[in-house]
Image (cartoon, rainbow, N blue to C red; front, side, top):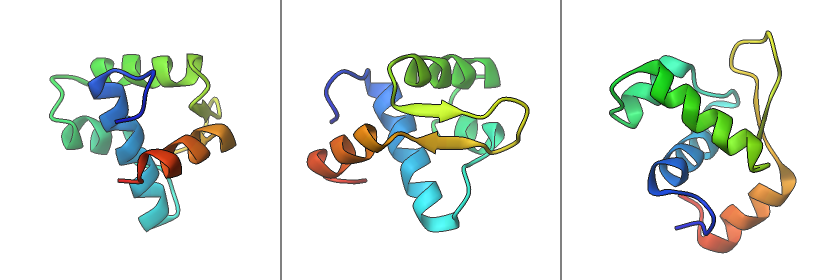
Length: 83
């Protein structure tokens, strides 16, 4: 588990990283919500906001699937053993 993240934040971050690695684009909000078995898109959105505020991801406003994993976060993910 990556330190500094809650269990769900960690789950979402690892899902995003694995999805981007496999597909070359970020997952949709629906895909993230379904993958984490969350009750609503607003729950997923809150997790994304937290990841962004902590500097793990960057979201490009106004663009679909525009999630970018920050370089420092990539290093942390590698160190923690990628998903």
